[in-house]
Image (cartoon, rainbow, N blue to C red; front, side, top):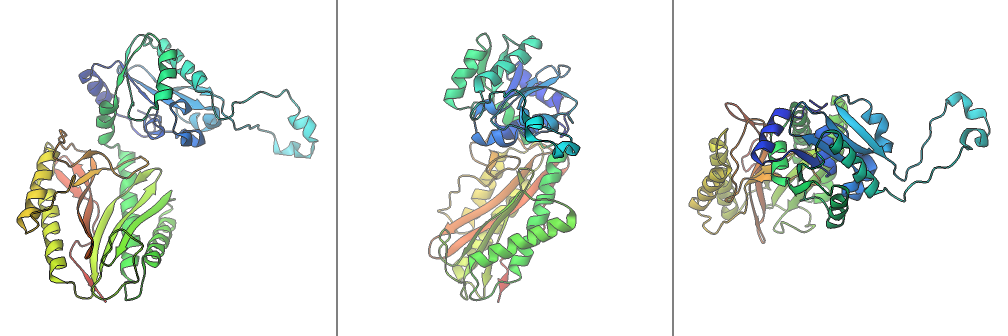
Length: 407
């Protein structure tokens, strides 16, 4: 296993089912998942040449990775991966601090080595080819994350691997990643706990005249305070807060009768939590009360059904019918939730949708949500972060779901 616990046996079974000899991962988040080290700043270019990770189908064949040379120190702590390094634009050197009294010509006067303006993708792919050849995979059937790889980079990959059969491994990679490792769901659990701390603080200051910016600031500050107490460093804090009849715009300061929607999350090591609640300032109109009750009934029906072996499409159908049967016949939400993990967007595959072919498995972390955005009334969403367990589910978000009144 890697530092974060890549399940090689699961990977083997998935690759066997897809008739793959190996997976080659290029998306930076996928690389970090496979080897336990983020590619760093070079990955921000979102190009395939920045880094790669090789997962052979044979679980006895060692993992391999091509990484930017800037990350060589971080990679040194990983013992289960064979690394190769390619130069990037960042020039660095190590000196003994005691020598800082010497002239710079003495310290830095050696022969200069040219560096690329960013990185040399062809050189990185050549190193990948060497790693494949060393494992007898030069002519293998390789599954790549083609949902990420830019077309220009794919041409370079084919040049570097002329004898390999390159196919789309996106589905296999998704199915591998949808079941979380212990390290992954611990990050997601910490993230949702911090998010709830922030949301409690934001809910506590609801009053007439408050605006979205102030609520977001209080939410973020409370998250960071809670993180400091726990010794956790969140990478970022995000919120989608709406006040009043416009679910999308900046909105006006809160007035009595306004709907307030809080869709919030915290990112830890790239892993984003996701949960939401909807409340009201004062007494809501009848339509708001009945709509929230219908959405809540739909969410709770979905949670009651969700569990290991359950088709996500069935959960979707149950939630949709429940909301529609409660008087919202025109409701047609495209999905009622999604996977969570390490990705630029918190909404990840698999989706709780009508066209899903996924069965829930223990170890999956999902955001289960029932939203509706009503121009002229407000934004509504109730969302829980859920861990699928061998015996059912664990709802990781714990705040009350009711249409709570403030003010």
